[in-house]
Length: 179
Image (tube, rainbow, N blue to C red; front, side):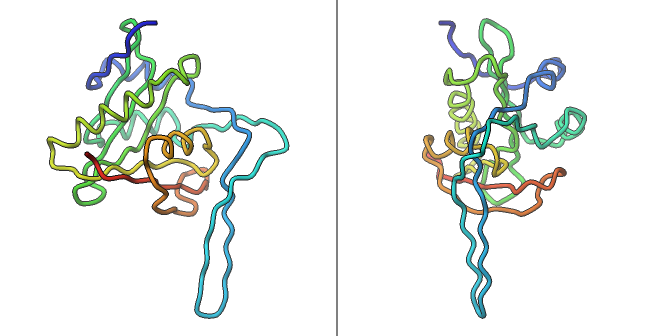
């Protein structure tokens, strides 16, 4: 099996990155439950199995990804055999001392091979020398594979934002301190 190489993204990578299959097949979603009582609001999430497997489209369009690329603080590309197979974009301006992972994508044929984990480790190596001490991942509440990756990687649920994405999906946030 070829070794995963992670390097900073180049402008010449963009055409390959936006052409990747950003969609994911899902069987579960995190469903939000809200309870409003006098003097108290309770919000919880629970994993719910869907009646059938469905394809979840990425919440950002390729055009928006290209437009927003220049506003990111950093971008990393994962390569297998010299070919881009995944990427991650970061911002260090959304919260103090925090690396915010905005996009984490692995092309469909290369998933479940450790590429996303390699990108997260490289993002940590990018963040620490910049004095960033926390990392936040954002994802759709429907993206169960990303949620499971976050939990497996030591991230903890740290919040949500209703109707965060253009498609009105809920964004979930997972965070952890950097070592």
